[in-house]
Every structure is written in C-alpha cells, then in structure tokens.
Image (tube, rainbow, N blue to C red):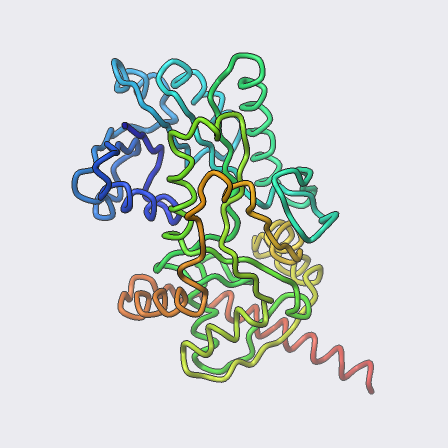
Length: 342
C-alpha cells in the first residue's frame, strides 16, 4: 500500500514514518519542502514542494494515487479546502490530524470520548481545528470524501520534555530551573489530570487506522493510558534528573494575564487546554486497533528525552526572558502574600 504524509518530520509523524519505513507492506512518501532530510529514514520517498503553492503541488502529484494521505500541517480551514481539491480523486483515505484541545472547554465531564462536544472559546488554534473538521465531515456526508479525523493530546518524543508553562523557546529553561533547584512554576494547584503519549506508542494507534475501512467517516482520539497530575509530571522529571523539585503553584488565569504582554499563549495553552483535567476513554480506537497500548510510561519516556537533550546542545535553547519572567511572577506573588499577612 502507498501512503503520503504532508509534512512528516514533526514530533508525531516521525514516530509513524520510522515504523512504516520498516514495514514491507507500505510504500511511504513525504510531501514537504525538504528542509529536514536528516530525520527521513532510508527508503522513504520525497516530493519536494511547498503544499501552500497549490499549482506547484498539483503538477508534482500528476499521475499519482495513494491508499492513504495524512495531513499533519493543516492548521486552518483553507488548508483542508486546498487538500480536498488536490486529493479528492487521488486517495482512498484522507487522515486529518486535529487536536484533543478541540473538546469542550470548560469540560462537561473529565472523561473524554469522541462524542464529547467540540468547543473552545479560549484558543483560536482549537477553533481552527474544529472548523477544519466541520468542512471535511461535510464533504464526507455530501460527497463521500473518505476522511478520518485523528485527535492527539500531548504527544512527545525524545527531542522534547512536556511541561505546562514555558516560554517561546520550549521547555529547556524549565528543565534548567529544575536542575538548578530553583522554584518551578506549575499552573493551578498541580492536581489537574493530564495524559502524555510517547510518539512511538501513538504510531501504533495511527497505523492501525491507515487503510482501515472502519475508520472512514469517523473520528478517533489517540492517547496513552497513563494519567498523571501536573505535580506528578514535574516530580517525575526531577526524579529522572536526580534532584529535588521545588514546585511553585500559580493560578492559570493569573499566568494567562501576565503572560499575554510577552506573547506567551497561556490563555489558549492553559485555560483552553492543559489546566483542564481530562481522562481519555480510548475504547473506540481499541475496538479496531486492539494492539494499541502504553509501552512507554512517562517515567521511561522522560529519561529517553533527557538522555537525548542533554547529549545534544542544539536542544538546549536558553531563554533568559522566560527565566526572568518566572522570577518576577514568584516575587510578585510572595510580595502579595506578605502585604496581606502584614
């Protein structure tokens, strides 16, 4: 079978590509600008094009047909409208990567299924995903366009450490604060529930949907089975580093307000996502992909990530602006306490 990945070199997709590259049943193609060839496994074919240039892409796709087309970089409805024009006669299945952040906020229930309502007034990113899903499902209902919707939650790989609050340069500065045993900001009181999924586990669920007729016209969430509180997540990182965690809890609404002037998207990222307790019920996925399970719990995944990041200086991006911002938040909250206590 023949699969095309639009993008294909990100956190989620690389785990899938690596697994498929070893599967003799699949011929794998990537459609991207070719900027990250070092992460492309041997034997994977590439179509070098900017998918946003529809005419150029259409020319390079002439005469090609795929069993599955997987869209990993579709963020607004215009992206999927373009894909529909490009692939409506070129594939038996179109898989769209949406987001679990599209589920209703605030959550009506902490247990999330594919039937949970889609609504997120706090995050434009999520609303764009919802609009994209709506367009694709309309095309399925009215024309039979063979769409499958996939909603990942917080998926990570060896190149990143999942944290709740970070600056514009990623999580390294948070890891550094933990290593230096400085106070580390955790949103809320640290007790909200969250699910983390290593990308190789995610790949099992995703590949099980590829070419699967039972997946056409359906939406699936793909997450691991392990649920942790944010305090437990940060404590697990500190344990892997061999240091004591010094958590400092700050209300999510306060963080969103004081992060806005620095363009830290914490209203969407926290109030519209990570601050909301969620537990994912993956029964629907496991009915058609029974081998989907968590094989890399966070206690192991975080060590894989730390080993990689600490061995690769390019992953250690300093962020002095964020570091100073954390210190100011902590100082301000402590000053407020002192003023009230007198």
